Image 1: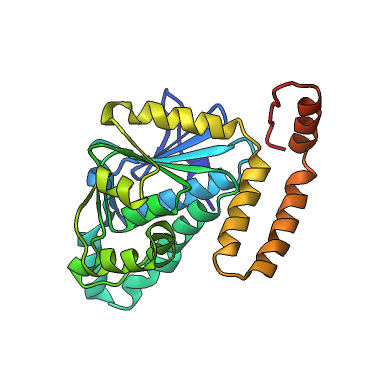
Image 2: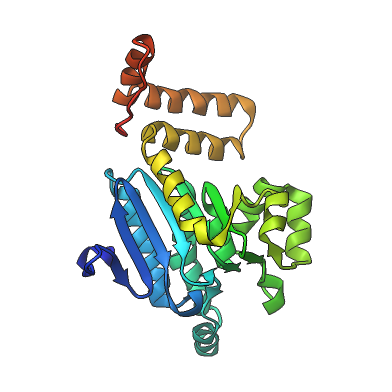
Amino acid sequence: MSEFPSAAANRNGVELHHGVELAIADAVGTVTIASDRGVLSKATKTALRDALNRLADDPAVRAVVLTGSGATFCVGQDLKEHAAALSADATAAWDTLREHYVPIVTALATMPKPVVAAVNGTAAGAGAAFAFACDLRLVSDAAVFHLAFPGIGLSVDSGLSWTLPRLVGFGRATELLLRPRPLSAADALALGLATEVVPAAGLAARAATVAAELAAGPTVAFGATKQALAYSAGHGLPDALDMETGMQTLAGTTEDHADAVRAFLDKETPVFRGR
């Protein structure tokens, strides 16, 4: 059960729970990781997971923005909490992967509507992975990505083995994970990790504009496109064609499609309602 339905909203309509803010306005849901220094405690991970699942299930939300606060997007696991968990039971400490990180990345990557990462600052470890799991990444010119897992003797998690090769290619992904280095916003753009680099002061406004454009689009068709792209990554052409056929049939039987065809024939601009 989500934590957020019982959370009280502040006077601006923003719900805050364990360092995660959730705001919904004009068909856009915005999730802000606002925990201290952008770290992910167990409570923050739970709140983030529940906020994303709530938005995924809300038909009134047609686009999602994930961002951070201050100079930090998200720096991943709370290492003090993690050290205590390792001391208590080193194997059980990793239950958090299935309980939190896997559901968070799954929610971002399979959200049946577009997800925009507004990377406002440092994105490290799982924080970088969360950004890569989103559909678009608008990156502040002050942001830095850190693929920090080898520095603390770890492999990869939070979907990095799946998302990173698809964004930069297998060879470059291997290099970045085995020989990690800080990646500036310019580096991220050159590598294909950033969709767009934005001056820091204008990032929130740019993210709002892009999210509004996506929220005004054919939501079912966007979700079907995401499913077809994800499916094609692990299947051959015949299976991908079959998947496309199913997804196109889904999109093609919506009110949005029928209305858009009528608008085209009448030489009008279509208005999509997400159904």
